[in-house]
Structures are given as structure tokens and as C-alpha cells.
Image (cartoon, rainbow, N blue to C red; front, side):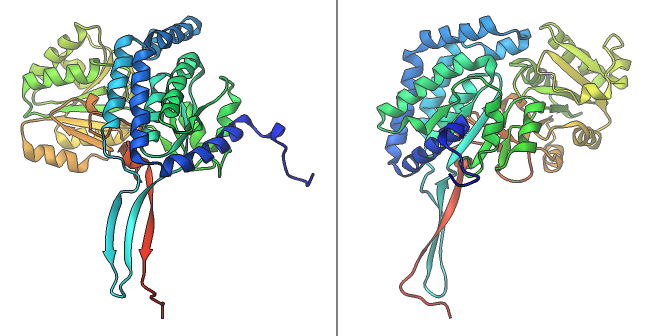
Length: 422
């Protein structure tokens, strides 16, 4: 055998799976849109029909996991959560298919007609930790956008992810599409992560969702482009012209609706002009539901019983019932705090002054900025994108929630009538 070649026995399992996914991607990209839609409908039905089986697999994970209560909450599946996922898949099935859409069309003076046409990226590699339903989100978005997916979930949710993967493959098969369009690692071995990152030429884009250590590793080692789901160190700024009752409702939702999601507000910024009257109300609202606090000196001058915050606290994504608080002298001070500590995910301003809101929104460096609403709306489904494979905070596209339309590239089609270039 020539030097430098490998037999199949020495090819990493992830590379074997990626080759199979590559073949399936070619079929998925050109099949009728209705066939991809049918697969999604079958997946939604399978989630409902297989609820008991899925919950049993999830119980196996929970019995084996030695996790904090917060991480256990992210891992738990319930019938209600599965129904919510099924409804999301149904909504995705009802969306316009992005494959083959003409994004632009024009004609040159020489008569050449050009079109820019949306095409799938190819094979997506997905590495994630925690919530097992992340894999369903990724798989169904991949199906909708004509991409194949190779999935590596976290070992703590392996049985749940495996059971969900079976439902997805059944949906593909019932629609007459190859099951290899969505593949999963055969076991929870850590070596699969490195093998995936070295599969350049087989995997076109790697998507990573997890803790900072995992994201940094993937960004450092991947030999293909990476879409890294952003850490969610989000801020809500209560401006001096805020409606106080609106601010109380929104801040409570932004911090406590689901404390462990990336769109949860981690830091409250409140204008010094209204802090003496409003901050005690905000703290009382949240404390009544078990929230604890880390406060700067200005906030503690109003509420001395609050624990003092450190710079590290303001740089921490708590993902729990903990809220950082800083009293700021106006909108520019709020923006300066955000620039210093934000992860560039989502920021919100609460104010009745439209000019101030526009000033804030134009200057925030983050992928998502909101006015008079909860940062927990940072979600592809809530944006009408049909879900998300992650929220990206980098400067280059895709940015913000990445749905099916963002999982596309394009080709240029040139139609001529015999033109020759002089």
C-alpha cells in the first residue's frame, strides 16, 4: 500500500460517518422541498408518539449524571418540553423552503443574465453540551435547509440524544430520504470531538454550543469554519425615562423566566436618577423568587445589605438566580459598562424616550439589541426564523440567531446566448 494512505480500519469513526453524511447531503440538497417538509412532519409526530420512550432514555441520563441542580434542569425532558419541541418542528415545516431561492437577478449590458441562488452549506458538524433537545433543533434546521448533520452531544445526555436521533432518522426514512442525512457518534467517547475537528473536506462547517472551554477548544483546533454559539452575558438597562411598572415586569422576566438560558439578563444597569426609588422595588420583586445579587458601590449605597460585586462578577454568566447590579450615570455610562463586560449577545434598554432608545440601539456592539422587552426573546423561534442552531455574536455573518436561511451559501448562475469575452 502506498505510504500515507489508510485502510478503513484506521479511519476515525467520525470520518466514516462524515463520508456517509456527505453522500446523503447530495440527495437532501436536490430533493423536492415537499419531501424535506414531510420529513419534518414525521419527526414532529415521532416526538409525540415516542414521548414515553424518550422520557425513559432521559431518566437513564439523570440517574447517571452527577450534576448541579442548574445543569440537571437543563438536562431534564418532560412531556411538556417535548410537545414544545414538536410544535417548533411543525412551525419549521410550515416555513418557506430556502433551498434554490433566487436571492438576486440582473442582466449585464452584453446580455448575460445572472442569478444568485441559495444553496445548502453541505455537511454540518454539531458539538454541544447539556440540553438534549439542542440536537433536535440542529437536525430539523439542517433538514429544512438541505444540509446533512453529524451530531456529537454531551456525554451527560447521551441516551436522550440517542433516542431523539432515532426519532429523527425514522422521520427521514418515512419521507423517503436517507437516514444518513442526520448521523450521531456511536458512543460518548471524548476522542470524537478531536476527530470531528480534523475532518476538513468532509465537514464543511462546525457548530459548537457549550461552555467556554469547549468553545475555545473548537475555535483553536477546528480545520474548517466554526459557528460558535455565544455566551450570553446579557444586560438590561433601565433608563431614567423608563415606565417603572413595565421595568419591574420586564426585568423579572429577563432574569427569572428561565435563568439558565443564554438570553437571560445577567446584569441590571439602572440610571442613578431613578435608582433610589425603583431599585428597592426591583430587588424585592426578584428576591421574593429566590434571586440573589452582586451589587456595585452605588447600588449598595441605596441597599447596603446587598453583597458587593467584583469585576469578575460582572464578567460572569451566572445562568442561575443571581443578578449583577450597577447604578450608572446615564446612557453613555451604561454603554461603557456593556462595552467592557458584554459577550456581544443581547442587550436591552427600558425607556419611554424614543430618542434615547435609538441612541442606545445604534451604539450597542452586540448582535441583538432590544427596546422595552425581555432579553429572553433572544431566540430564533421567537424571531420567526423557525428556530436556531445557535446565536452568533461575531462581526461577520451569520450573526444573531442562525435559522435555516442563515445555513445557506449561494452559487452564481450565468445564462448566455453565445457571448464571447473580448
